[in-house]
Amino acid sequence: MAGGFVYTAVESTAMSTAEYYGNTLAELGREHPEIVALTADLANSTKIGIFQQEFPDRFFNVGIAEQNMFGVAAGMAKAGCVPFLSTFSVFASLRCADQLHTDICYQNVNAKIIATHAGTSFGQAGSTHHAIVDLAVARSLPNLVVICPADGVETANAVRAAYKLQGPVYIRINRGFDRVLYGDPDYDYGFEVGKAVELHEGTDITVIATGSCAFQALQAANFLESSDGLKVRVLNIHTIKPIDKEAVLKAISDTRRIITVEDHSIIGGLGSAVAEIIAEAGKGCGFTRLGHEDNFAPIGLHEDIMSIVGIDSNGIIATVREVMNKDFEQDDNWDDEV
Image 1: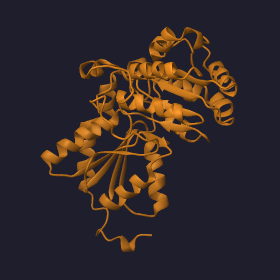
Image 2: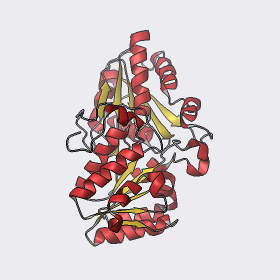
Image 3: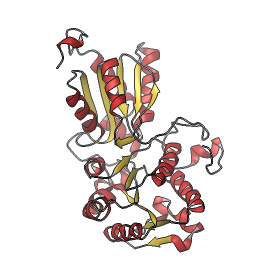
Image 4: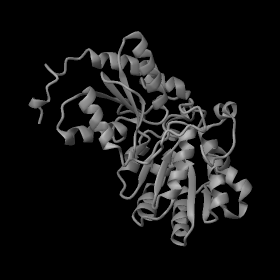
């Protein structure tokens, strides 16, 4: 990653997604003195403490008072600072929903929310710490850009992109050590806010994934190509809002079978966003949403929860086979579509 902090390929696999964020924020802090950082007594857990170590005079711990932190950040943004505020995703989206809505989004201030411990990545902490509805909240708020990186390298790119954007940004990252999707830190895959990344070419079916599920989708596609001869297109939708409608519409036209997969409720997140595009396009296709059903997630380790819910590679493989076996239309002629 050009201009990024220095680390080796071996070290990159040992770094958590949050550490990528913390290091990138410190790097940005050296370049831009207007950046300030705020935490609600979670400096170590969210890794924003890396910024604190280097810039103690630009770091503010408001204590266990997340709503207050959002108000303080809005005021700092109004004064010309660029605040980066960190807390767990479930707190940023639910406990602080009013402040996110009124103080940050309504005023359209230049604040960047780094929401950690997303989805069920802190699965053993239980339902109070599972963030499986935060995308539904965030993507419904006016003025708010919503990004869900797939790994550490993508997180670093997202943080730098967020600084360049004017206005509020919500970046959703996991707690722990995500599987490495972009293993080479110098690999330029063209990260651009609002643009999907095609991880695997395919013409039979498309799996549209976000966050930690992008790696699982790629693993599934590679397996299905070798075992079943299926050509599975995989799209990494790192930007939930604004979503890449063009990439989704192209996948509908090219493959006519779409599966979305996310560590989030199937209501209101990536699956809903893609469903809206499909409905507005008036194009019939086979469509399945993978994610948490209309219930709370089980408690346990992240990888175990993903397996139980069916959003790991095995669950995706099984769903692809199921969708491919469905005769959802008598022919592949678009002429009879709306």
